Amino acid sequence: MRRALRKPPRRRPRTILGLAAASLLSAGCASQVRELMPTPAIYHVPTARAIFEQVPEDRRKDYVDLLYVTDRAPDPTPEAELPYGQQRSRSLAFGSAQVALLPQMSWPELKHHSLSGLRDEDIALEVRSVDELGRYPPAPYPLVGTADGAQRDPIVLERHHSAEDKLRAEVRRRLQSAPTGEVVLYVHGFNETFATAAYTAAELCHFLGRVHLCTFFTWPASSTGGPLTSYISTTESAQYSVGHLKKTIRTLAQTPGVEGLHLLAHSRGSAVMLNAFRELALEAIAAGENPADAFKLENLVLMSPDIDMQVASQQLEIFASDPGLTTHWDEPDLPTFVHGRLTVYASPGDKALRLSEILFRSEHRLGQLKPEDVPPLIQDYLAKAGNVDLIVYEGKRTDRYGHSYFESNPRVSADLIELIRNGTPPGTRKRPLIRKGKMAWLFERE
Image (tube, rainbow, N blue to C red; front, side, top):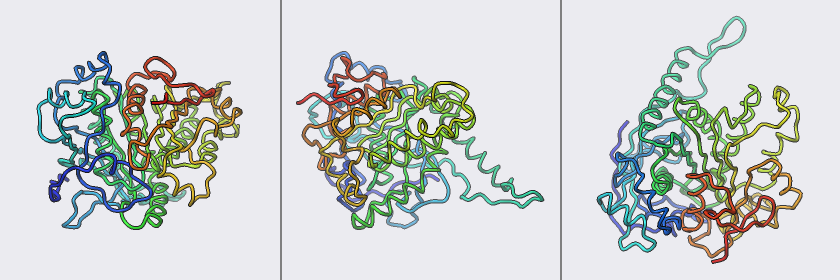
């Protein structure tokens, strides 16, 4: 399915300050146009500016071609601006989404603007085209009765394998121009459309130097209606999408040629990601495998996570606190979940998380934590688990609700890029964070 997008009336792009926040406090469909995020502070350093010189030749274009996977239902209405809406689909689809950087320009011009702290021209993002390349059969897969029970319908099972093979073939094709051999998978949060999810994935891909295979998983988050009903609907859609994200991660990781997988999730998407991550870990351990090895997991990054702190802790601590889960694990040490780091970016000034804090009567949302909110006993526990970091930003808001600082704040985005691109630990010269405990860190005051 290839779809030319219907263009809305042309208007000046809304800045990232107003649109990328994906606020829990606002409603209404997001615009199809947005301004490119500010240049990360890493590019203000002369030695780091060479990153754009290392971009593969065939990726030096004024657009970013992304691989997407979605369980959003197609939007068949004639007035639809995007091919997928906010309804749930029973089948998982994948394809190519091109995000253009406008106005049209040469690579040297785009590189100049991408390195500029204060740009002399606005760079807008716009979805240029969406090309659906394949689709899995609708779930649940039909069953065929047998004398001893039931089996999956072999015809549908063949369609499943055909779709999976096609997705893996597309991943292998894209890996040919990805020098790292690694996949970056981004999962968005509440009040996001297909387009806004694509914008964030494209920005991250661009400022990572376009050396990874960049993809995003977009789930049917609500983007219309009142904040309360929309958020409740989104909460259940997040649960609905866990199995589809799990299938996506497994397929990507098990594709020949993939060297590593970086999982990034924002806001309510962090709950989708953490649940899928936990189920995959259980799956690997039950098979006697190390989760980090089985799924080639390099980094798991939760940005402004909209999750209750105790719920998130329980989902991870259960592996140590329930020995029955590791009955078939033969090693004396507990399994490892990532080769790199498990990182949480939080900000106590995140106003967008206050609605969920009220709705769930949550004492602490993970995305609002301060270092002192994590007791020394818990910090000690997580430090022993290894490579778990809480990175706290306490500076001024750089977007309307203080919820998308990983994009809108150049210091935070620089820290994220250094983590993903180079695997640099916090508290080093390239990540000059202040230690506030065994696993908690603060950005220096501006």
